[in-house]
Length: 369
Image (cartoon, rainbow, N blue to C red; front, side, top):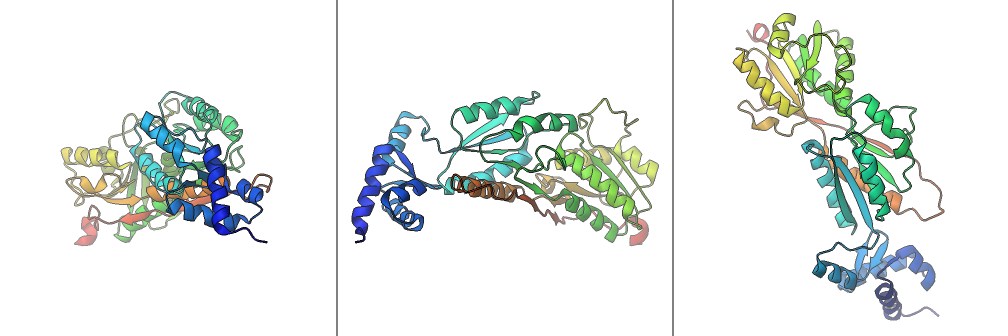
C-alpha cells in the first residue's frame, strides 16, 4: 500500500531537520520512492518554507538561521569554490554570471581572488577543498605559456568536479580532458578583421597584450587570419602597453609606438586588445596627430569600457557573463551525477563573441573619396 503523501513529507522533514542536510538521491532510497517523487516533495516543502532546496540536496532551515544570526556562512559542505585572478575585471563579469546559476541552484559560493604571485591558485584550491568545497570553477591567471604548463599537473589531480572558465588547455596536455567553457577568440578576431576588410582596409596592425591565454589566442588568430586573407596587403603586430608582455626573455625586437608603426607600414586600421589599453592608445594616437577614425580605424577587443571613450570604440564583445553561466551549469551537471554512475563525457564548450559597431571604423580616406 502506498504511503500517504503528507506522511511521507513529514518523514522527509524529520530526516532533514535531524541531519541538517541530506542528498535527495539517498533519501529517496531510504523512503523507497523514486528520485522524481522525492524531488517533487522537496520542491513543495521548499515552496511552503519548511526546508531549503539545494542542487540535489534538501537542507534544514534551522542551521541557516543559526548561521545567519552568528554572521558565519553555513557549514553544510554544499559549497562551490570560484577562483579568479585579482584585478581582472574581464573575469569578474564571468564570475557574476556563474554566481546567478549557482545561487539559483541553492549552492553556497566561496569566492577566492588569487594574487599575482606565481602558483597562488594551487594553494588557494587546496585550502578550499580542505574546507569541504564540492566543486571548483577556476580561471587561472596563466600569464605565460610556461606558467600554464606548470599548473597542468596539480589541476589534473583535483578530486572534485572542476570546470575551467575562459581557458583552453593545450591539446594533448594533462588538462585536455578537463571540462572547460571558453570564448571562441579565433572567431572574435575574425569579426574584427572582417569588419575592417569590408570597409576597404588593406593594411592592418594588431596592438595586443601578451600576458594571458586570451591575448595569446588573439595574437595567434590574427597572424593566421591576416596571412590567409588575400585582400590584406600588409599586417604587423606590436605590444599594446609596456607591461603587456609576460615573456620579456623572448627577443621580440624593438617595439615601436603604435603611431610610428602605422606610419611605417602605411596601415589605415588597427585591432587593439584589451579595450582599457585601446582607450589609452587612441589618446596617444591623438597626441601624435593620428585621428580616429579619420586617419586610423580602430576595433577594440574585450568591450569592457570601449563604449565610454571620447570616441566610442567599435569592439569585439566576448560573452563574458554567459561563459560563467555555462561553466556553472556544466559543473552542476557533474555534481548531479550519482556516485558510481560512471564518468560522463568531457565537455569543451565554445561560445561566440559578437561585434558591437560604434563608429570608430570607417572606409580609409582614399576609398571614401
